Amino acid sequence: MLSKEALEEFKKNYKEEYGKELTDEKVSEEVTRLMMLMKIIYKPIPKL
Image (tube, rainbow, N blue to C red; front, side, top):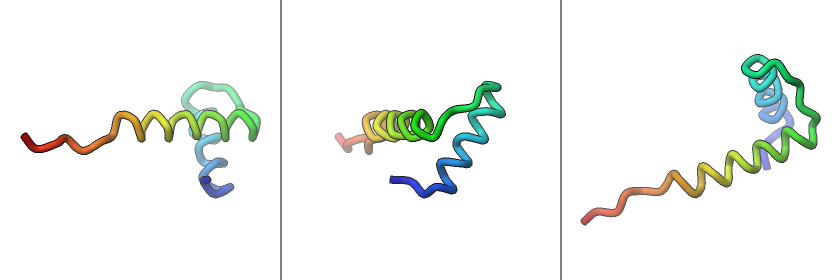
C-alpha cells in the first residue's frame, strides 16, 4: 500500500491532468489498478 502522501500526490496530478477530483476511495482503486497493470506489463525480457 502506498503512503497517504503518495495518494495525495496522485490525486493532485490526476486533477491537474484531467480536471476532475477523485475521492480517497477512487484514488486508492485507481492506484491499485495502475500498479497491477505495471506488474503485468513490466517484466524483464528473457535472454534467448
